[in-house]
Amino acid sequence: MTGTAFTPEWIDGKIVNFSAAERRASSLSGRRSVKKEWQAAWLLKAITCMDLTTLAGDDTPGRVRRLCAKARRPVRGDILEALGVEGITTGAVCVYPTMVSHAVKALEGSNIPVASVATGFPAGLTPLPTRLAEIRYAVEQGAREIDIVITREHVLTGNWQALYDEICAMREACGEAHLKAILATGDLQTLTNVYKASMIAMQAGSDFIKTSTGKESVNATLPVSLTMLRALRDFKDLSGQIVGFKPAGGISTAKNAIAWQVLIKEELGSRWLHNDLFRIGASSLLGDIERQLEHHITGRYSASNRHAMA
Ligand SMILES: O=C[C@H](O)COP(=O)(O)O
Image (cartoon, rainbow, N blue to C red; front, side):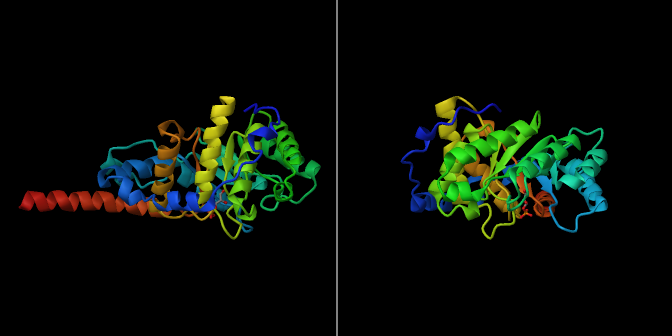
C-alpha cells in the first residue's frame, strides 16, 4: 500500500476509553452470535484466513516442511468430504527468514504465500540498517509478506514522526511484498497508544496491522483488537484506503477464532472477512478447529441416526 503523508492531526488529542472498549469486547461471544449450523462455515473460513505459523528457536527445515504440508491439507479428507468442501488451504505460512526458502520450496505449485517475520523479531532492537537488510534477505528468499516489528520506544516516547519514518523505510525495503506491521500491543501500555500506533503504521503504508508477536506477556486481546479495528475504520474514512487486520498470539481455540470473526463482521463488515484483509496468526489453533469440525460432523450424523430410528 502507498499510505499517506505523515498526518499527526489524525491522532492529536485522541483518547481511547479502556473501560468502554473492555465492556464492548466482553459482550462478544462467538457462541451467542453464531448459530450452531453456521459454526462449521466460520471455522472453515478461519482456516483460509490463517497464517499457519512456526516461530521457535528450534525450527528446522523438516518442521517447516511438515507445516507446509499441513497448510496445503489443513483438515482430514474425510471431514472435508462430509462437509462437502474441497481444495481448502490456509491463508499463508509464517516463518523466520532462514526458513523462507524451505517453505517456498515445500509450497511450490500452490498459491499459498510465505510470510516471514523480520526486523529483529520479536524485540526489534537491532540497528535499522540491519533490520532493513533482513527484510531484503527474506524477500530475496521468496517471502511475499513481511511481518515487521516496530520500535516500541517510539510509541512510548510519543515520537510519531520516528515511527512513521521507520515504517516507511521498511515499506520501501519490502518492494512488492506486503508489509504487516506488528505493533506488539502488550508493550504499548495504553489503548490510546495502540490507536495512535495503528494510525501511524497505516499512514506509513502498512498493508496489515497486527496485534502481537506471540512473544509478549500479553498478546491478542479483544479490547486491543477492537481499538485497532476502530483505527482501521477511521483510517478508511479519512484516507479512503483499506488496510487489513491480523490478530496473533495466544489464539488457540476454535471458539476464539469465531469470536474474532464476529468482532470484525460487527465492526467493519463482511468485506474484511476475506484473507486479503484478515489473517489470524497462530501456531496452535488448527488442531482445535479440526477437532471441532470433526465433532460437528459426528454430531450431525448421530442426530440424523436418532431421527431415522425414531
Ligand atoms: O504471528 C504469529 C504468532 O507468533 C503466533 O503466536 P502463537 O504461537 O501464540 O499462536
